[in-house]
Length: 210
Image (spheres, rainbow, N blue to C red):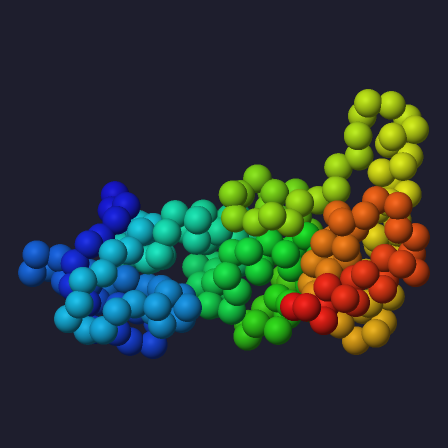
């Protein structure tokens, strides 16, 4: 199995690159984000490779690092997300943006990608929400209730309810759920005592800074 290729760029097309490695040209499919970041034709490049072997073909998929390859593998675990769709998602969002959208339960972020309908978008968010925090790609973590004692657990639950209400309020103001989630989470991390109104105000300040 091929895990990495280092060579010179021979040709870049809409969805792939031909990498010349010691005279052998390897056709590697990549996201548009990866292709846009490659150097010019004739220059040296390196790609982390995911090899897919089938009865009728061998396809190589290239990524700038193992983090993005990990996301490609994770996306492929969702029923209905094939390799082409996984690359389309990676073309639209960087790993941290995807993690943020999934944790925010922002199915609309995935519906905006061509070829992904409402049901598949919802499936992506639902099936990956518990897996996303295990990947080392994001600082956005799902709040976890403390198990030390009931009082602390209840406090954490109340904090989450306030944060959820703040997110809903920001969405009603016209912000996307992903934007609202990120802002409310940042604001909540800065103060544990803020009520709903104050948390909304602090979240709006975070959105202005963004």
